[in-house]
Every structure is written in structure tokens, then in C-alpha cells.
Amino acid sequence: MRVLSPAKINLHLRVGPKQLDGFHPLVTWMVTVGLFDTLDFSLDTAGRVGLSCSDPSLPVDDRNLVVRAARLLQAEAARTSGGESSISGPVAGEPGVRIELLKVIPTGGGLGGGSSNAAVTLIALNELWGLNLPRQRLSELAAGIGSDVPFFLGGPSGICPSTICSSAICTGRGEVVSRVDSPSATWVVLMLPDMSMPTPAVYRQFDQMPFSPGWNEAIGWSQQCPPAEELLRLLRNDLEPPAFAISPELGRLRKTAETLVSRPVRMSGSGSSLFTLFSDHEVAEKAAFLIHSQLALRTMTVPIAVISNLQK
Ligand code: C5P
Image 1 (cartoon, rainbow, N blue to C red):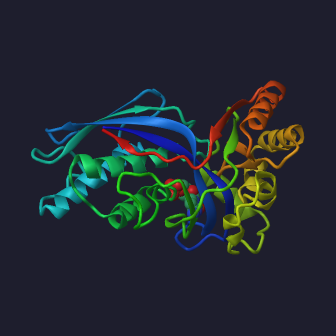
Image 2: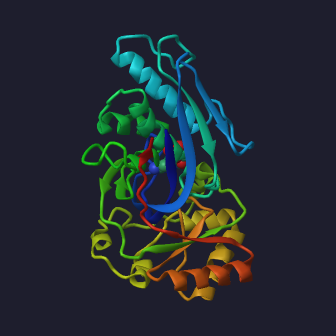
Image 3: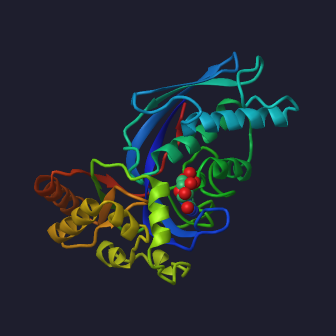
């Protein structure tokens, strides 16, 4: 079974003050974008969970969210069939899997690649192992893996079981997912600086900086389908000031890119990826070329709010 695992961007990200659990409440509008990792799943009848990855710098043990997702689901399968939890290793008779991960989405870029891979693993193994767990349960398991994972599952109900979510407003830590229509802008120019931003450090820096009220305002305007340039002016990311305090170079890149393309440029998640939006593919490609040639930044023009399904 093969599944394309899309990247996401946070079109809009507002962050509230740190809670007692150490996490920050969020209001974020996330959409998938047409940049994909590929995961191939095949059954392992000996109950093992094995991962191989095209990127040798990534761990293939329990530190990888794909392995964590597979083990969680294996333990869930054992629990629901009345067996023992297998979180620590293979158990004969339990479902196992061999997973090959072809990595394309940059890591540490705020594009949710690891989270997407974990969500895809939950969906694929639920099917491959014939577990028939409801989305509600998969979403609960997803929230235990990482704050961005539930987005890709699209919330507890109402989505075809084999489909990845493409556009949602997420609250709580990010795990409360309400699917919404995609924006009317259809193209995103991604700018991928060659730097990795550590999410916990960006949140720690956020805690040191003056807090901006209004973070929890509803974003009803998201559904009024404003054209790309109008929408861009409404978007905001509260993690930009702390990320640019950690990396002033990233802040300078954003500003220069904005001047070059004469439209707002935003950061996704905790960075380092930057993006801007277009309704017209040709105009988007020209802007991407300009940024690439002037700033020596890796850029790509990809569609927004892509749909991904299991392929058997
Ligand atoms: O949930 P995830 O593993 O993606 O979070 C990584 C880190 O980002 C957390 O350990 C926490 O420091 C920070 N975080 C946060 N508030 C959130 C999401 C993440 O403080 N809502």
C-alpha cells in the first residue's frame, strides 16, 4: 500500500500564553500543500515494525513519529483484541509492518512532514491491519504523537476513512480540528531557507517577548474567500517575532522576499519555511524565479489544499 504524505503550511497562526501543561493554546488555519513524502507499507507477519528512510540523517527507531504511530496502533490492536500491549517489541500473531519512507519534505521547516507521515501511518495501518478504528480514536492517538498530527486526520468525523484532511482551523494545542473550505488562492510559493528552527526554542523565546492580545479572535474571514492578495494581508503568525529573534537572518530574508514580490510573505509554523500566495500559476512561477535568483533561496510553486488518498 502506497500513500502520499503532504506537507502543510499554517496560513494563520495565533498563539496564547503558556498553560500549566507547558503547551500554548493556538488558533491556526492549516492547509496541505503539494509537496509530498511517499510511504510504502507491507505486512510483516512476525509482528515487527520496521522503517527504512531515504534520508540517512533521520532516525528509524522510536524517535521517528512513523514508528511511534505504528507501535501505538499495534498496542491499540492488542488492547481491542484483549491481548497484551506490544509497545516494547514484536509479539507473534500481532500485525506488523515494513515501511519505506521516501523523504522530500524538509525537516525542521515548519511544514509538518513528520506529523503528516505519522497521520498517514495511522490511516494506512488501520486499513492494512483491518482494525476499523473510528477517526475519533485515531485522532486521540494522533494527539498523543504531536500537536500537528490530528490536523491531517481532519477531526473525529465526516471524512472518508482513507483521505487526508486538506484545510482546517485547529484550536487547543492544535488537536481540536474543524474542517473548513480551502482558500480561493490556489498556488503557494514556498521558500525553503537552508536552516532548521527548533520548535520548543521558538516557543521559549515567544514566552520572553511582549504578548499580543486578541490571539483567540475567531477567524470567520477565512470562509469569505478573499482573493490571494487580500487574504495575505489578513494572515499573521505570532511565532515570527520569536523565530526572527533567534534567527535575524530569517527575518531579513522574509522582508527582502516581501519587497521583491510586492506582497506579504509569511512564515509557516515555527519556521523556517516562508510562503506567499497567488491565484495565477504563471505569476507565482515568476515570483518564485525572482526570489530564487535574487536570494539564492530554494523555492517551489505548489498547489494549495491538496487531497491525498491511499493507493493500493
Ligand atoms: O506537539 P509537538 O511535539 O509538535 O510540540 C513540540 C514542542 O512545541 C512542545 O514540546 C512545546 O514546547 C511546543 N508547543 C507548544 N504549544 C503547542 C504546540 C507545541 O508550546 N500548542
